[in-house]
Image (tube, rainbow, N blue to C red; front, side, top):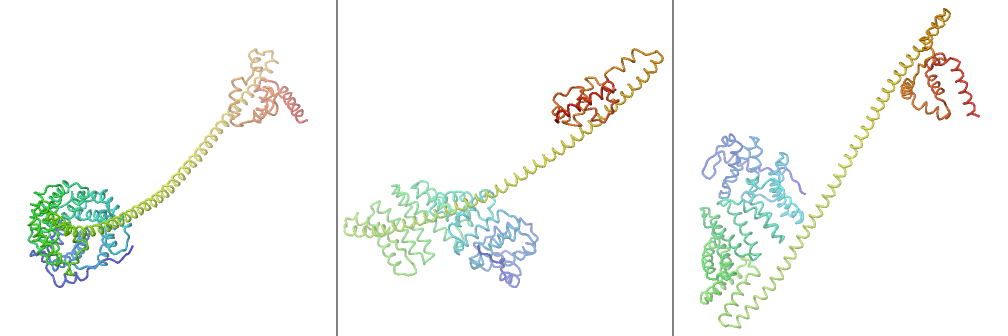
Length: 582
């Protein structure tokens, strides 16, 4: 894609500064200071609605030469863009070269992109790629892709948002391109929407007539003559209701009026409605002569084409005298066209004339001339058919290549999308795994802290229980001492006797003690049972109390046994251990 620096009409600025100090627009003086003071919406309205189409070159040059610098001073970006757009539309009047036009469109697209204007960006991009296509800088396949993208973009944003930039003209250009590729269904789709945005005004005449004519051609190809006539009638109604004092516009109006009349006449004849067809053909022929008379270069050719429609109708009605007069006039015009190199008559131009002549001589009973003209027309028809077939084949090939290019683009885009999704999916999975890992680490740390807290509580509870056991042991010891004192005094109490021989560590105490012990020393009791399967309950209790570093007399007091019993139990445990070792 070619890129050029920003566009700048320095000549216009010079002219505006030194030649046009006060802007005169078609007799209406506009003060530049007032233009600067306008509200932005008022400036835009003036720029978009100004009648450029009927202004002379000097006025157009003055218009842009003064208003563009003024808009630049205001910093009104929308107005600046609108002026550039109108410069593009008036490129022929301003005599801008294609490279200069392309520079202007690049500049407009860059501005729209910088301002994040979706509508203006599509407009500038659309015209830029068509200019590049004309300059053979992009292929038909690339333009085909751009056309589809432009239409999709306009549809997504809403066609009504493109009104200031002549939405019917943009859609017409898209439809015309599809017609060139013989994709008439896509053309019909685009132009049907364009029809909804046609301005049936003098200024909107040009594109309105073209859009209606292409839609008429669509229905003609479908052999739907009533619908095709309906569109030809729309053209006729439009032209008959809009006369103009502007010479070029009035000529165009008269040309299309005559053209529509002849089209209706031709299609009525196809349906067998010959009488009504004759009326339209007569009027159309006279209108065509008037319109072509204003342009001598094409006057002969225009009248020659119009005669063929009228002559066909006269022959179908059997009006041979009128037909002979028309044939003589057509022969004169054809010779004049063939003798004038400026006319550049088309090779197939005589085809309809030869067919009409063959029909005329057949009706007159002149078999020789009928045969001669039949042969001439058949030769041209065969050649035209071959050319049309080749042209249609070429169109189909171009469309197929364009569609293939679109499929490749979509495939590349899908692959890019897949890689984007894959990358995104990988990142999502990575973050999910990271979140899971962090969650797992957090949970492990939480459980660890919880375990540590529980262990600390268990240690504290076990220490408290151990302390209570020591206190009980001391109480037992004191009771024994008291008992011994009482015994020496023969005052032993039965109550004290029961206390000294009571088992302080009850089953309930043991269960609570064991739970706490296993939290502090997990696996210790299981390990002891595993090492010594025949370990008794008393021996197990002794081992657990010894693990707490309790003295023999403390263990004895806790278990409610004598110190000797503690020693004996220890000896039994050693014997068992020695036995296992041997």
